[in-house]
Structures are given as structure tokens and as C-alpha cells.
Image (cartoon, rainbow, N blue to C red; front, side):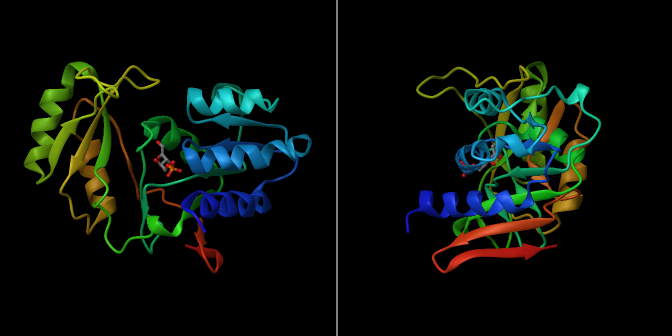
Length: 225
Ligand SMILES: O=C(CO)[C@H](O)[C@H](O)COP(=O)(O)O
């Protein structure tokens, strides 16, 4: 099976977690896109969605799925999203698609977090995938110095094929921190959150996944935390 087929299988399995008549939080990325396409098939069963990025909102709307502003919603039954890495405790690195801040916000108000990922995303120790950190543009160099002091190699994310800084949906920049071996994800998340100028860090550990649906050639493996 290709990686895309594994992503599609896990996205399909996530439909079992959709709660009828409720608002569903929807993540960002290629796996989340497969989920959106599956959700479209049962869109009449749900009240609507809250999107974690402009791209996700556009794809949902393209399928005729209602997208609500988070401020107009009281609760979200379940948040379904991919990950760049996930460990055996359900802690994740996210933000490869630059949507980490909104993903974290939507996840934080959702009753359940279901991570959908192909098997390559399961790791023993987080950190091989460079850790994305969203920063306010005026603070990016100051924040990068502090991230280097933590032992990482921070690099400003640039627009594809350009030297210009990448700009997120929130007007922020992304710093990707390589070279971290993250043995205590909750402690590192707390430490990076405390750096002034950081908007959000792509470590989802304090609020990790409740369930992971991992696509493997032997089928979708379910892990509950
Ligand atoms: O955090 C994310 C976007 O900000 C994605 O969930 C993560 O990058 C995984 O993406 P994909 O499903 O394309 O592998």
C-alpha cells in the first residue's frame, strides 16, 4: 500500500468517531484532506465543522459542509487531525503544514482528539521531525536565539522557492527547530510556551491525542491513551 492509501484508510476509519448532530473540529494536511472527503459523504449527519486553517475551511466549503467560526460554537464533539510524529503516549509534533496554532486552539476546546496518521509517523522519541514554532514576526530572531539555547538548530521557514519568510494564516512566521531529542514533551512544551514572542509550539503533549488510528499494511491499528 502507498502512504496515501494508508492515510486514506485511517481517514475512513475516523468516520466512526464523528458524532451525529454535532460540530466536528477538522485538522489540516493531506491526511485531514482525505478525512474531509470522507466527511462529505455523511455531511447531512453533522451540524457542521470548525476548521483549523483557511485551506481546510475552503475544502470543507467546497464540499458544501457548513464551517462555523469558533466564536459561534459552544462545544466541539471531536477533533480529527493528522500529525508529523506521534509517540506511544499520544504526544505529537504537528505544524508541518503551518497550521499548528489554530490546530491547538480547536483541539483544546474539543472533547476528544482523534489522530489519524500513516504508520511512519509513530516514533519512539519525538524530535526527528523539526519542531515547528509559530512566532510573531518582530520577535523571530530573539525567539530563535532562545530556541538555540535549548539545544536545537532553529531555521526560519521560507516561502517555497524564495528567501522570504513564510506567513501563516495568523500573520505569524514559523521557525523549525531541528536536532531536538524530546524525552519530556510536556516540559519542553511548557518551556517554549514561556518564551515571549512565541504564539504556539507544535508540541501537542499537555493535550495530546485521546485516540490514534494508525494506517499500517495490516490494517488500521487503534491506540487509546
Ligand atoms: O500539523 C499538521 C499541519 O499543520 C499536519 O497534521 C501534519 O503536518 C501532518 O500532515 P500530513 O497529514 O500531510 O502528513
